[in-house]
Image 1: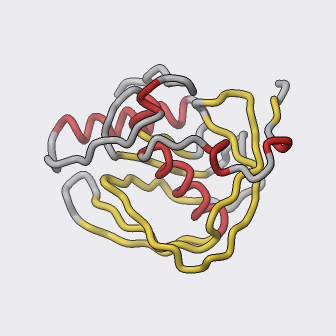
Image 2: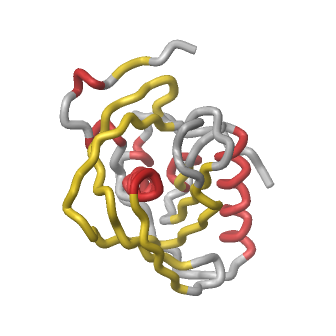
Image 3: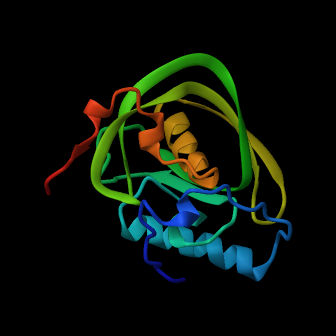
Length: 167
């Protein structure tokens, strides 16, 4: 397992859609997932997508447990998603402040769907679905956007709500 350097806003890999995984159950895919998990945890992230470590593949992970960056949000178990997609269950949009490991020390008020159904494959190629609401749905959509070359400021309604955090 390797903790990777993060890729920051401005890097071209964060601006373009990522490539789908075609070979499941490979040692390379399993190693990528392990690297994403340790890199996310080392940086206190709520999630991480492969493009954020410079890898052009549709793989993402998320987990929220005892996270100092998000101390007051609901917990979400470790989730690994390969080639994810989602459907909107409710058209209700909510605004919450988000941060991103690829935009360090920044926060912005981003709009997201509050209730979704996501589907993906695990590393072995098994398909699964999960319904998500609230923060869980937000984290999924944030990481999913990375796979499509979108950063959270593009989901902001008012750029006056984009700010720098001193720490």
